[in-house]
Image 1 (tube, rainbow, N blue to C red):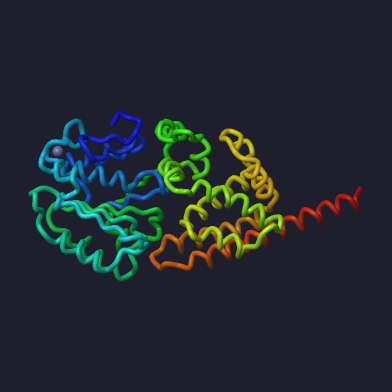
Image 2: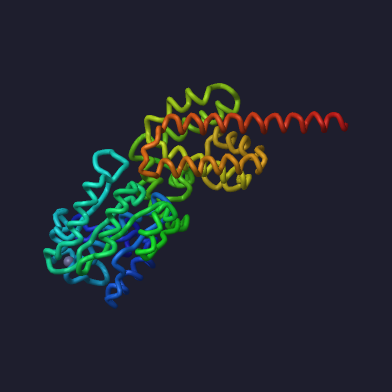
Length: 354
Ligand SMILES: [Zn+2]
C-alpha cells in the first residue's frame, strides 16, 4: 500500500490507491470487528477510483489470510481472484457498450445473493454504476438488499448518490470518496503520463487522477481541445451549435459536459491565476475571458441546465446525445451573445457619459 501506483499483490490483485487509505482502514477495521455493513454506497467524482476500491476490498474480504491488511496473494481465494473466476464475487455492470444494466442481469445477482457461498467465506457483489439500473432493475435489486443470505457484502458505486432511489439508499451505509489532493494526484499521474504535462491533464478533468489518465487512453484529449475551439467558435459565430454537436457526439458525451462544467466554474471564479498554475493553450485563456465576462445571474441558469443534462446522461434512460449537445451549445451561444450585447451597451453608456 506504500507504492505511488495502485500496486498489486501477485498478479491482478488490486490494492487501493494511496488517496483511499482512510476508507480502506475504516473497512478493514469494520471487517476485523465483524461489523462490516452488508451494503455500502461508494460515491464520489468520476475518476477517483471508486470501482477499483470496491474490487480491491472484495479481494481483501475474500482472502483467507490477509497479511498487513492486504490480500495475501497465495491462498485459494486470492488464486481464484487472480484468474478472475472466484465464484463468490459477482460484478454487475452494463454489458457490451450498453449504458444500462438489464433486469436479467439483476436476476442473476439476486440468485447469487440468495445462494450460500461456495468457498465458505464471504460473498461480494459489486454494482457499477447504480445509475445504470432502471426502475425495474432497481426494484429487483431491493429484494437482495432486504434479504441478503449469509455473509454478503454489496458495493454500490455511484457518481450521484442523490439519484439512487431512496428505498435503496436507506438500506445502505454510505462512504464518500473526495478528490485526492493535487500533490497526491500528480505523484500518481506523473510516471504514467509519459510525454504529457500531468498538470494540464489533471486540470482538464477537474482534478480526478484516473479521469486524467483516461484522457491519454482514447482520443478524448484531442476531443476536449476541439471543444474549446468549438465553444469559442460559437461565441464568435464561426460555427453553429448543430455543426459542433454533430462533430462531438460520436465520442463519449459525459466528458464534454464535465469539461464544460469545469470551465464554467473557472469562469465564475475568474480564475486566471488558477490557470497559470497549470499550462494552458491560448484558446483556453480566450475561453476563460469569454466566460469571465458573463454575468453570474445568466451563468447560473446555464449551470442548472448543464446539471440536468449531466443527470440525463448518467441515467439509464439512454437519451439522444446529439440532441442534448445541440441544446446545450445553442444555449451557450445565446448566453455569449447576450453577454456581448450587455458589454456593448455598457460601453455605449460609458461613452455617453464621457
Ligand atoms: Zn489470500
